[in-house]
Each structure stands twice: as C-alpha cells, then as structure tokens.
Amino acid sequence: MRKQEKVGYGLVALSLVLVVVGSIGFTTTGEINDLPTPNVPEKTFFGDEPIPENGFSTFITAELTLTWDRNDIYVVIVDEDEKSRCESQPPGLFNEGTTTACTPYDADVLAAGNNGDEGLAWDVQPGVHYAGIGTVENTLPAGTEVNMTYSVHLQAGFVSYFLFALIGVAGLAYSRVE
Image (cartoon, rainbow, N blue to C red; front, side, top):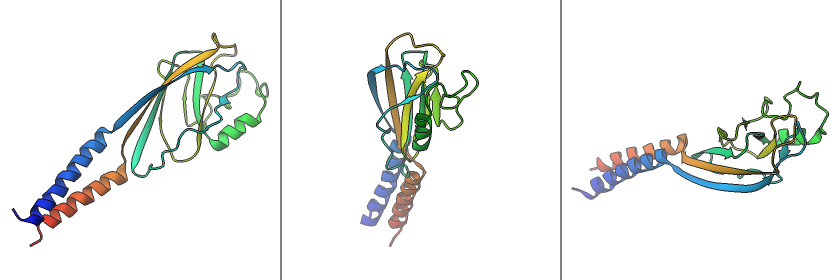
C-alpha cells in the first residue's frame, strides 16, 4: 500500500470516527440547590447573570434540560429584551388571571415549564438569555427554596458534519493520487 493510500484512507477513517463521536455527543449534568422561591404572585424573577452562551453554535448544538423539585414554581428562559420588559413592569400591573405577560404562557418566552417533574428542554440559541422563576398559582409557594437539576447535551452541528464529509472526500481523493 502506497503512502498516499495510507494517508487517504486514514483521513476517511478519521472522518467516520468524527461523525460517530459527533452524533453521540457529550452530556454534562449539575445541580443548583437552595434557590429562594419568589414571594410575589404573577411576577417572574430573573437571575442577575445570563445563561452561558454557546460560542461555537455554528459547529456544536446544545440542548439544555432542566428539572426542579416543586410543582408550584415555573421556570422560563427569555432573551435580554424580554427580561428588561418584564422587570420594568411592577407587580400588580397586570389583571390577575387575565393576562399571560411575563409568565410561562407568554409568546415571547423561548422555553418554559410549569411542572418540575417534566421540566423544560431548550435548544440553546446564540445571544444573551436569562432564566427566571415564578409561582404557578396566585398564592405563595409552599416552601422557601427550590432545587434544580440540569443537563446539557452537546453534539456536532450541521457545519461540523459538512467539515467531516470534506475530510472524508479529501482523504478519498488523496488515496487516488498517482
């Protein structure tokens, strides 16, 4: 076997391994314990820090799955503009029970979950995003703390698969060079 064939077929094998590894992906998990629960009905409270961005969103897709231990709390994920809009309106401004603004039913919410057992799933998008929590009912929550569990699944995106295919085609072409 010639040197070009070895290198070429090596590139083809590498591209196949990258496709398999990229399809399987990688999952990381964690917990956030003892978050204080909101004590104002019909108001979403957002974190001060944004959710970490996916800087390689062109090459890697990320899916966030979040669950929590209470069913009287909802969790939402919004962009920076929606967070500013929700925080600028004082509690009690909305007609109780007649609006969905700044709740998990708001059309501008990117992801929402109002059942801790089911949680929420969100395909991470480019940009600045914030997580917020609120009470599901118009009454105060049963406890003062909520515990959350998250997992982030990373895998190759479309552009990565395209690059893997280019590596495979280049390897195949190089193996045919005389």
